Length: 94
Image 1: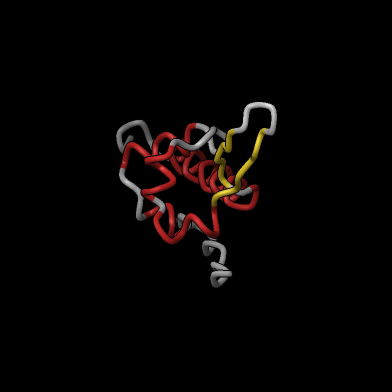
Image 2: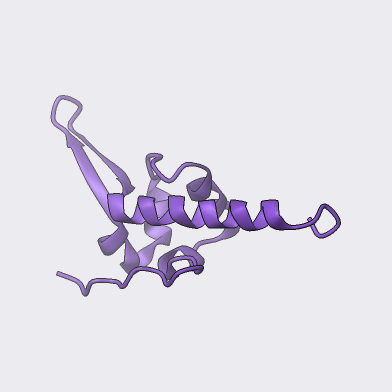
């Protein structure tokens, strides 16, 4: 069992999220509850153990990967903070 990761400090993205490329970050911010692709799970590297949940479907005999609920909620919260910050910017600064 791996060590538990501390949640992101207020106003900061989770550490595991910052290690992803911009396309993966964008996809996860767009829908934190989406099914994760194998390349995305691989990109999470050792962090995957702490932030990825698995769902096994017996009748399909397949495993699907999603962000663990805590990680998804953390991203939804971060997304809300970024959207709020963006709305507070003047049109000139956007």
